[in-house]
Image (cartoon, rainbow, N blue to C red; front, side, top):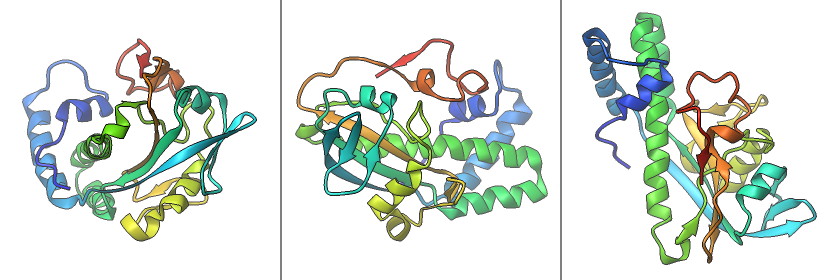
Length: 222
């Protein structure tokens, strides 16, 4: 996967910047964008699976992966299948950020924000690729462990289910932090029928009341 340009507007949001961009910040972003694009090695893996509903939980067929909580149940309402996936920028992104932290904190901050934007771009590109088939006409937005009441501890199970450590070098620490740090795991529901819209995005995030990065004050829908 090749990314030729990064979403600087999204990076500025991660940096907490609003309004006009001063020339000095624009120059920093331009320099960091080049460095990030040269450093990252985007990759992703995914599996499509049937969903089995047992009591209040949802199990992924042919696995021990169990999705618990009311929010993921609402998210997957009407879906009989799901795509489980993981994406990463690779360890080289972490290495670049650490090096810049020792050299120039302003550059490090910009690089960190650009990498956060970049991994979301990787997810968007991956979605377009694996949702392009006719069987994925109706699908939800991606939903990650830690959203709402879906436990963040599920990260480990997802990585194991995808064999992501061997395939893309992705691991999860005992504190459920992903390594490389600029990585994402997510679940997308698939249905043969049109799905109802539900409140999602920032509205179901546990950090919504104290997050500086929310895109707007309104709830997103999917």
